[in-house]
Image 1 (cartoon, protein in one colour):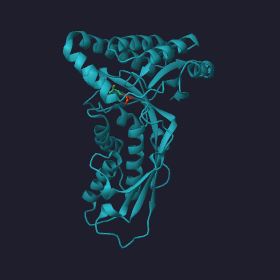
Image 2 (cartoon, rainbow, N blue to C red; image 1 turned 180 degrees about the horizontal axis):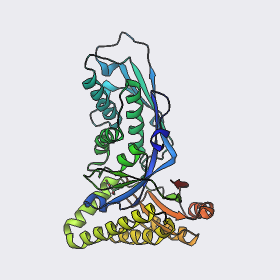
Image 3 (cartoon, rainbow, N blue to C red; image 1 turned 90 degrees about the horizontal axis):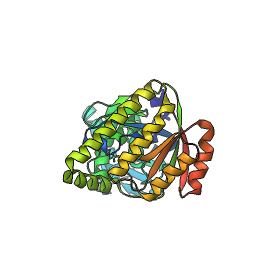
Image 4 (cartoon, rainbow, N blue to C red; image 1 turned 180 degrees about the vertical axis):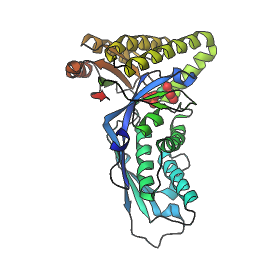
Length: 329
Ligand code: PMV
């Protein structure tokens, strides 16, 4: 089971990265979107118990958070209310305390590391928080469902992104492809046949919340035009979902091209993304589009497996900071 593949031993957990396949931005306006885990990059959380020290009173002083990649180590009691990792820990502890009000865990350090590039749309923030919640849940003996993990991580995503649709925390917490409509129960699914994606990173980082805010302003200026584009994207997502479910994934290519063109129309592409999309197609991809918030970050290309290395090399030769190959299962 994919859901268990990220479980290590009690007190340890991993979480994959993710990409959005279809439907970004339109998902904020109620249209469906499809996202898949990217198992080739991962966040890991490990709980290490500490010797009880004659510390100042209070559970939060006995808990340390160590974010290895950020070179930060701090007590939970020192973390601000809008620190996403601290929020993940506090929300998980609150569940523990409501289940066992008299219990108190031994002092511990939560140590986090990740191979997911930060700020590139691969879901690093949601993955680190998911790994943290799962590791802490296992350490505390809490049996958290995927939905509970996702709900906690959604709270941390709000601190990072303002008003996220919830797709990142959902796909990462379920560790499965998901068909997602904001405000509805997510639909995790299995692909009928695996397919291969190359993910190309422009190396440009544009905060998702800024791009989402700009799209909101443009939508408010021209609601009918933008509404029609979001509708058209929603149609593409529904068609893509049907093709993935029936295993006709080689037919996804044209839908990716159409989705990219619609994202260009709402102004969220950029020359670097357009170049990588064009180069991927020239190098043998069946379809390609930007993925995520846009104006930078990543693009994805659907490729026949034998073309993956060539497409990845073409992307790296034309400005991609890195290209990653992933098999969607
Ligand atoms: O940039 P990412 O991969 O976190 O994706 C953002 C997706 C949007 O639809 C643009 C925003 C959202 O909250 O769904």
